[in-house]
Image (cartoon, rainbow, N blue to C red; front, side, top):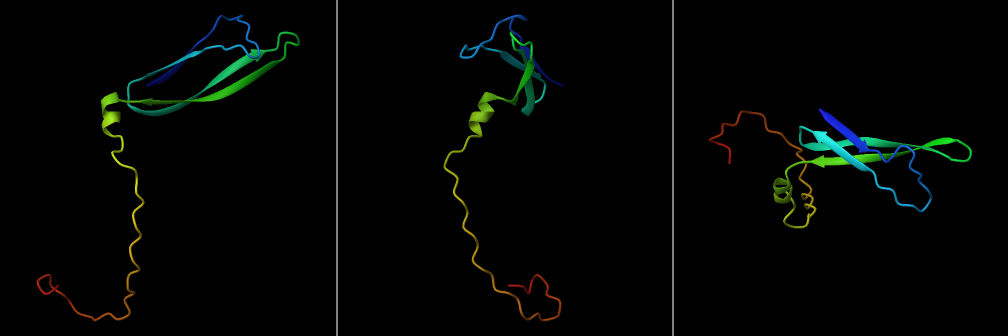
Length: 103
């Protein structure tokens, strides 16, 4: 079961342009993994009473810190070389080859 919760500020808290406001978001999860949700913030313009919504994604990774550290790369990723072009088979000799005859 996954559950996200937002710690709401006071119901009538005034939020204004240029004023930092902090919201706490917690996730309760019984399984490890990556989870996604969204936070919807409903605002009301004080003068006009007009409402608007700001929606932001919330991404959560839940796991064991030691395991995460152990799984980090130990060297930069190197793109493997492409194999050289293989010869195209143009002739096929019919028959059965036993494993002992194959070289």
